Amino acid sequence: MIRSIRGFVAALLTALVLGGCAGIDVEQYRAETPQLDMRKFFSGTVDGWGMFQDRSGKVIKRFHVVIEAKWQGDTGTLDERFTWSDGEQGGNPPRRVWTLRDTGGGRFIGTAGDVVGEALGVTAGNALRWRYVLALPVDGKVIHVDFDDWMFLVDDQVMLNRSLMSKYGFALGEVTLSLKRRTP
Image 1 (tube, rainbow, N blue to C red):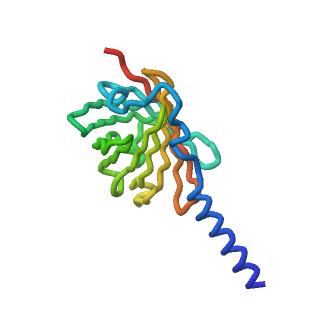
Image 2 (cartoon, rainbow, N blue to C red):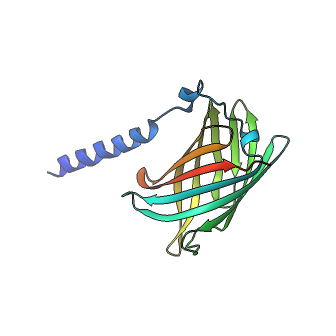
Image 3 (cartoon, helix red, strand yellow):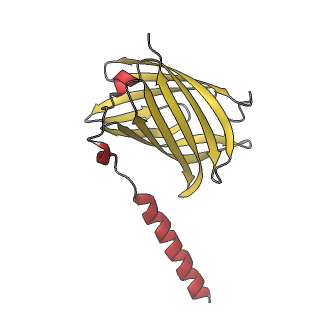
């Protein structure tokens, strides 16, 4: 009996590890248009409307974010200011400032105050995939949560974003976000 339980647990852990390695490669979007130019889309003011859903799909919070974006050489700054639907921060930041570095070949490195280490991003065609760990305050504690963040350019003004959150390979929830560039 114990051997069969151990075997089941070992098989389950192997499946979880291998499942986490599998997935969609951003390169499959290489031919999709319009081509995502990070410097062009994230330049000036960008508005975003989004929601966080728990793993059951229940909407927990909605938000609006205003992003002031600018580039100097290969370095970009995205200054995000959030307004939450419940008026409370509840561990959610009112502001996050990203520093992005274009390393060439459609690759980007990003840092922010609540990002553990560096976010790694790759663009291909109309898509961007970010992977990073976020230090997320929950019930008076800070937990490190893995983000698999996908952005898809719809047209020159609109981008859709879906972020899957997990911990130890287990789904915690997702963030869905619609971004729109303000026209000058």
